[in-house]
Picture 1 (spheres, one colour):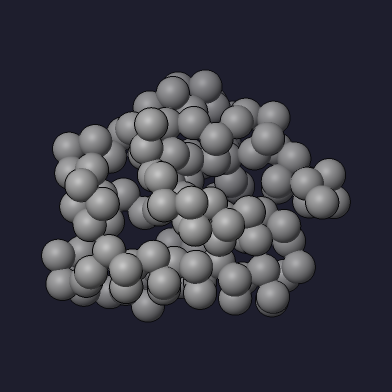
Picture 2 (tube, rainbow, N blue to C red):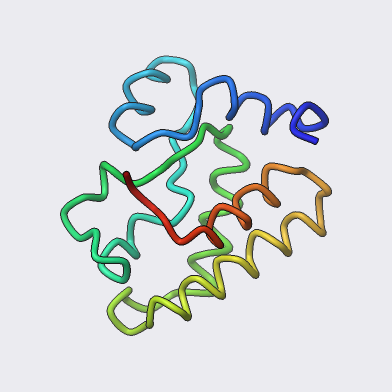
Length: 121
């Protein structure tokens, strides 16, 4: 499945890693380090102050902006106004919807990753 998605294959090539490590590795490539669980919600998962440790994968800017736009429209209030369960549920819904719309496994992977409920090492 991963090989059917160039986006997923690139993510595998770079690995699913903490933001700081991945950001440094992709510097100058034009790729973005995408927080699988948006860093805005670090407070909901007891990771406030550890945003740079949160797991990320590489994305092109168009895909990254599309995901960010979905999150901003569905979870537009400050993170503290949501429960962790709400953030998890909506995150899964967003990634599942993107998977249904595009058929790209990168979105299914992120949905499944959220279900693991581990956002940093």
